[in-house]
Length: 124
Image (cartoon, rainbow, N blue to C red; front, side, top):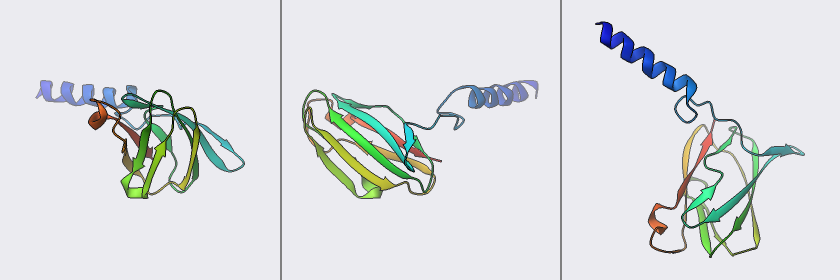
């Protein structure tokens, strides 16, 4: 019985102390004139920042730049699928949906790690 309590306390502490486990991630970017603006980079084989954390219902503007080759940027649930060209800033604006975690993924083949090119949009 004692080990069960110690395990429960340990799990609770991890949830409180580690971002990503207890929902303690800070909001990403800054609010400018009522819109949350987040600058992002796409690179082989990921996105920065990851995760992107926003509030449900707020207007979000992502300013994306591909740093090394052409990439894609997609969030299926939001019907977003854009091509990112190296060195060009691409703007994507949307209203954040209901709370949840949404997968961001690359839709343009960018090399052998393409299938694993993912990030998270966390809406709280």
